[in-house]
Length: 186
Length: 138
Image (cartoon, rainbow over all chains, first blue to last red; front, top):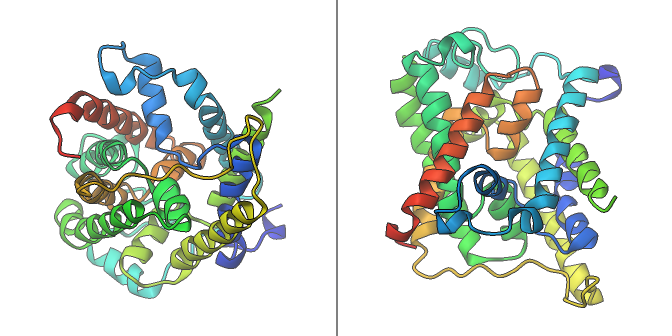
């Protein structure tokens, strides 16, 4: 099935398909597109209700979204199983920058030298996965959204708050890429 | 089942994230290094498609089952501090993990089960935010 799908799926196919999730969720039940809310719902489901932020009725407010996330996981698993993308054709500029950072194995969806069980307790693995993950969870909760809620749904709805958030996403991303990664990976 | 359509929509979204290589750490590096158009094309055309859809929905005056107009709730900008600071923190995490929340979860299913560590850490991050929330500027 891999051969039936061009890789990568071209941006002009993937982008509109992703954008259509916004009206589909509205038509299904007037629900807002946003993945990071699920972190909050999961915390509410497992953490005791001593914290006001997690005192909402997560099943009623976020049940649909947790099911959407379960679907996302299943869809990703199916894609990986039946039509895995071949070796990614990374831009030569990025390839030489990554070689310069000491990454040689550029196969798969993330560099094996960093994202492996044996790397979790090394500096580069810990910072990339544990600290990086923590920042994703803390930052999206603080900003009230991630790429889906702010960069796609929020910008499409011309919300100034989302524009501020997206500028923050990129500012952080550039600092992370050009200042932190060279310190962490080398 | 009323929730089945959400599962189907999520599955389609997850499938596209993998096939378009949005879940790839390398594609995110290309994006932040301004070395490829791919991710900008995806995000830009997604925003365009969603924006046109929202205009059409508003123009048609579509309403939900309970009679409320279909649309997204406006976000209060306020001082913008939560968006600027929270957004920058997420951006740092996006560069380090090479994934935003959807792809982070998708990667666990797409050949990098170790990303579960990052997902659990993200939950810890959200929980910590919830705990500190009353003390943070918003």
